[in-house]
Image 1 (cartoon, helix red, strand yellow):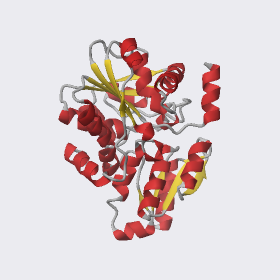
Image 2: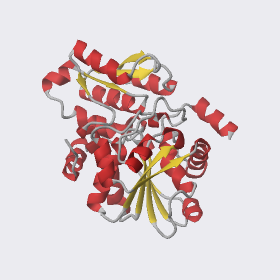
Image 3: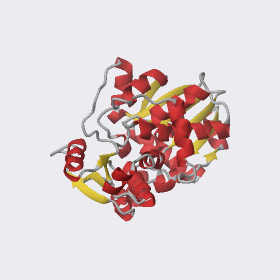
Image 4: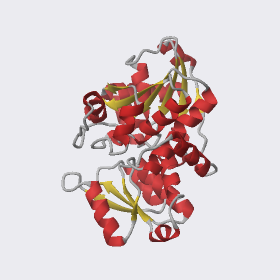
Amino acid sequence: MSVSYADVEAAAARIAGWAHRTPVLTSRTLDERTGAQVVVKCESFQRAGAFKFRGATNAVLQLDEVDRARGVISYSSGNHAQALALAGKLQGVPVTIVMPTDAPEVKLAATRGYGAEVVLYDREETTREALALQLAEDRGLSVIPPYDDQRIIAGQGTVAKELIEEAGPLDLLLVCCGGGGLLSGCAVATKTILPHCAVVGVEPAQADDAARSFATKRLQSVHNPDTIADGARTPSLGKLTFPLVLEYVDGFVTVEEDAIVRAMRFLWERMKIVVEPTGALAAAALLEGLVETKGRRVGIVVSGGNVDLGTVGALFAAA
């Protein structure tokens, strides 16, 4: 199965009234530093704190009555976990989430707080996919993956749809990339509405599997990458997201860990946006000058704001 813009439109109609239509912000300082006219889509203000709520809601709303009653399961380091937990709570669907033992405590607490059952696993002993599939079989649960799912991709594509509807034509859109659900969905929407707008994915340099996959046209993977951007620690693009990325995305850039922290600090201090490391990837690429922006209209997605305040304080202090 692939994903079309019609799927994105259907998702937008389906999740209307459930997901927030998040704000688009601008910054004179950001424009001056980049020589561009920049618009910032703030998914950090989405319900459950990240764009993931869009795809999770789109998926839960399409369950039949039998699957709704039995419940759903997924695997996530945090943002999809929280999003699916909240979507399930709002729709009366039981949710089980497989999470790593080293997941950020703030994300573990929020996932449990939304009512989901959390099953912890050790990254060195098993894979989250294997454990989730076994539990799904044992308990009769429906699996809603964090990114490699038509319903998820279509839901995430509504981010770009909304941004373009509000901001107008863009020359460039920068989107973070983990498993590629957000990037591929946004690329499908953008290339349909604005065929000449370049779509560029952004990854941590220490978790560059998607960039390598794009360059080689062969699916590459990475094992437990050591990056502060926990949302980008996915092992690879998916069977659905990889072909979509190859078809609709124009390029990739990677950013170093210190650049991620600098971008976070800029967004916190100058734009008053609480943003997590993964959520700042697109801004980091922009602020580090990794793409040509002078004289262009540029959109960036701030994808999430679920951050442990103690951790971010330590990151800023170290920088």
